[in-house]
Length: 404
Image (cartoon, rainbow, N blue to C red):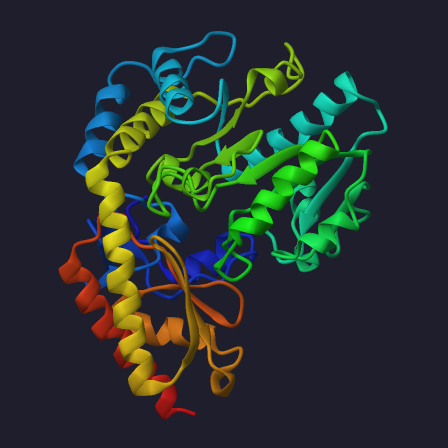
């Protein structure tokens, strides 16, 4: 078909579970995108923290093209070299002894939750199945992960949710003490809540979770789908927090835009996934694994990781300057290049109104709920693009203030 698709085609042909912007991006390079009309945007959204190296980074393009000429898919009846290289790279860079490769963050979290219950079932008791999670958390859209996530709206209308799942209050260790017991198999937590408002976990809270898990022989699961692969200024956030989980999940920036996920764990826990207990049709796909390996090796360097911290300071400086002039934010928070600007009381719940105004000014950004403007740009975004993007954001904010 030679006809150029339009935004109306989405409404005609696609299930209406999304409400995309009217513009359709057709080309990307670095931290900039162009739509069908040739209009250019600076990208502070990063595909929701996926495009860790921006658009069409030459290292990732080269890895994909090279693998495309050799081997695409063989299934899990066989292993393959790119998958083995990726698994080794992840294990050697983290606490883990073993890796399970899959296609998305939801798949990685589903695997982590199933593994925790299976481990407890096989090693302790079939009754040790309780999972503790947190309100406002987000762990994916499968039925299991959406039930463990702490936002009930995502499970509404889908029937009875799986049992044995309870939710504490994030950054409130006492709330977890009231929930955890010897029948708990796992505590699942984001080291920084992403969809829940870009809210960093207090270090003492996370350390307390580790201690509670140890006391009750439960597993600590870190969901690093959004915080992982350089996003916070270390390869994984746990490495700068001083708290080591038993299971860690990764996706998003892991593939730099190519769908891939991973679950990492120790030998002690991994043994519960014996032959035939779990699987993923595309897990360990050679194309995905080759791109992910290139992303990990490029990102896990002092130059990139230190650059993330430097860019965080620049984002904060610009946002605070915008706020000093317009008074729209009550707090700037986050780690690395996952940053949230909380709306001030005068603009409560209006973060989403900034997005279309920003697009009109040539900037893509995100929200994390109705009250937090979220930014998750490329980890290597040029400083000139940060400055220009912030100038465009300020114009959008000024328009919002003018409409009050």
